[in-house]
Length: 140
Image (cartoon, rainbow, N blue to C red; front, side, top):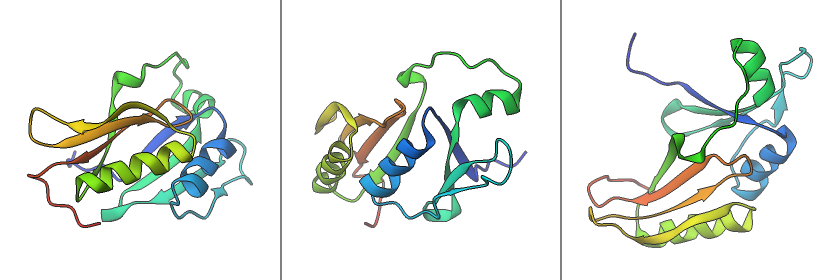
């Protein structure tokens, strides 16, 4: 298996609500919900830099498709990292997320390792870290 990820799918409780958060609140481009002509096929895709896709898909449908039980999750299981080019950009992204309805769980601050970051939860409690890392060049 090649070390490659092409799609990150987030299980969501309300597909429309999550679509609105990412499309309308964060301003991410999308064709909206597609696949509604198939039972259990409704999904929303967001193209990300580098060819990666973010997909929003109903949690119960993921459980059904994968033949696993839907269980309670902890936001601390993983984070989605969004690196930016400056401290000001961290602050701006966190403001945008909060205005879109995200819960800021950790206000942006200087980190012991030399960077600057903060965290927010999306409407389904997926944890995002917005990061400026002086060792990680990012163009905004």
